[in-house]
Length: 505
Image (cartoon, rainbow, N blue to C red; front, side, top):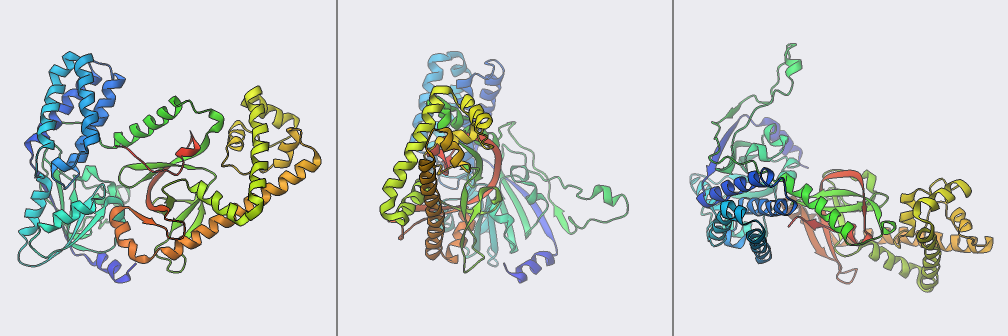
């Protein structure tokens, strides 16, 4: 972090805030048709589950189109197009009246959009930047989602003026302390968070949105109560706000709904997959950049990337210590499996025997759960054998293969009718497995640190994530992901769904 940049940020004399609309008749018609469909589904069809699912898919497609710089014919994948086509046919067969009144219009305009070889937003911005002919400028382009490398390359390729163009996501821009000649937000102020309406990092701030969205800023009195007592706020001192632009199309689509719907759908599908509740693990939701999320075990350790600490890039944190804007390192396959593999290498010849012992006592516990029910087992362990930690949630975790051993393992083993000698031997082996897992975690973090460098930080800031392949671990693929927010509520998740990035598309 540059102290000079910080000084420049607070020396910024003035900011002019402007608003611009990009017109695209097909997208406007698409938005109008979606709004009509939404009203019919929520009104005449009483939020029918199938029709609501189609609405959510259409909403995702719409915001993907309005958020991309690629030609529209390259934005929506063939798989999504086919899925949408299938949904249209289902509605035609099951809801012919709805199909005739609104869906057929959506289908027709969607077909026109995905055949278009231009992108109105990219065209407008390129023209805007090419008109700044007098001198090159330092430009920040801020998007909700990260643009792909192809989008950036194609966009910059049509800029004839040699501007210094920097790309940021909304979250990465919060941490940026440089100032720019112009900051261009792709979307209206309401589309972005409160930060964009109170912190200005350029001489010119331009919000560019499609014309189906209202584009204006409402300045907030940050210290209204204090001001009454004679204190003066300088938050908007020397800030000039341009004329608001009203939307041309009346729509009430909310992009943020898509992510919540995707999370709930994922959990519902897991329930419908027939997984036994005793096989699930307590987890929280970690929301990542670019409308993705993952489930993290609440009692887990997470590797965190610290780009500012040159000699110790990767450290382990308890999950409850992970915070918003942390960069977490996850394996794109099973991270737990990798730790177990490295732990077995540490245990050497003893690994096979120790793992077999671990499976045997878990199998005996699971048998009791299946015979008596998890609630009954919990009561017996708590009341008869005095286990303080024998809640149904804990027992569910103990049965899972990824759990090594409970804190009160000796008491549990006695309850499972093991002899004193067997209890002592099993407990010793489980303690060795645990030590090996802890050592494996440190070893993996250390080796990853040797493979990472500060050079990746710029791409990490722009994209919100960075993917690399490890030479140390036979080509295993890892992602560094920025944490946008964390929902620390308890969700019961299958082990194979933990620490795996999930996209809403």
